[in-house]
Length: 557
Image (tube, rainbow, N blue to C red):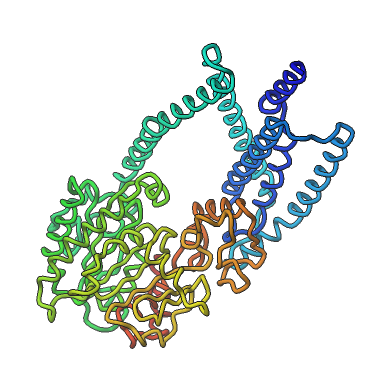
């Protein structure tokens, strides 16, 4: 009996370290194959390789640990004469599934690409995926086995002092506790600091072709309270871009004003409150509160404000617009969301509070109409920045929130409580008086009707994984994957437990690397029509939109 136990124990060690696990290979292969099935977006080879390697390693770990637990519980096992047959059946079924998948994967990718007017995959696609996938999978499996050896070593240490089973538990718990402590307090914090420092160095540089504006209505100019050198890369780009008065007059054939663009970088003031107050002071300097419209725009993680989202509004209202933005991070939105939770909400709330509290002291007849804007992570900050009293007492006038993240509380509420007759990818909330959701090309002329005094539009593309990712989709299919699907979403996209979760999660990293009008790349056309709805420009025509789009093409924004 002791010899048998020793044999089983040695078998477990070989299973987890020296020998590859057949169960792990089987589950890893099945999981990996599923990652090639259609997803929300066409996937670049690098992202597909990372996903395949990650999911293979995950499947390998599940199969290996599952078999180890089976042996540890001393559950019945197949006789030796049946094992070879079982392995042949498993290997044959895996090969059949893999063969079917790899025969069709190029077609699946190309179908999704055709929906988004993208070129077909290149011939080197498979080789590149294989190389990066193998590297990622081997690295993760090796790390898992090293962790197992360290855990086994820690579990063996107390065995000289307490019974074997108790010692194993105590040693494992102590090791895992130490590992979590080190990862949280040392590795995690240092990683954040290193990434933030690297991004801060990038933020110092000037965008190509950008220079300090000559117009006093823009931050960074000689008259501005905000120094050009402290705006940050995204801030410099925002105040450099955009139409000037002459551009707008040439477009409309009417007199226009010089649009106001105020921006405060992270280096412009030491604290979020100081940054907000500096933004207010530069708005006052430019006489922004005498304009027709004031927009509080919350940037994305790096501080970027999309020119194509603001410029249409400036054209639409003859430049009688003031826009203000305040940077809160150096990190891209996904990194900021994960590594700096709550930062965008804190900054946006302070900026709104400072500007709104001044705005509401002004005479209602002469002060500008107040609107909010946010794209992606900026929409999360903008959406959560508004206190309840700003909807009731001295209410702001509306908001355009593009690409709302799956963490946006109002967006999630609109989705959760939508009219059952409306699709999940374009939810209709109550009677549409306060909140409406639009996708590409869905903003019709009658959208001017039935609004409350506050008009709020969510601009959300059905193929945007940042909008439609769900944290529980590892265990259940989301509603937007039903038969009635939005534009740009392949009918071949099938929900697979766990795998679809990783597919859509990785899609978020390349969500903006698709043509405008798809994924997380929001188009000028949809911004233009959304702003016409939000600001009540019922007289704005489709011909004017087409003329503006022609100008966009000529100017390259």
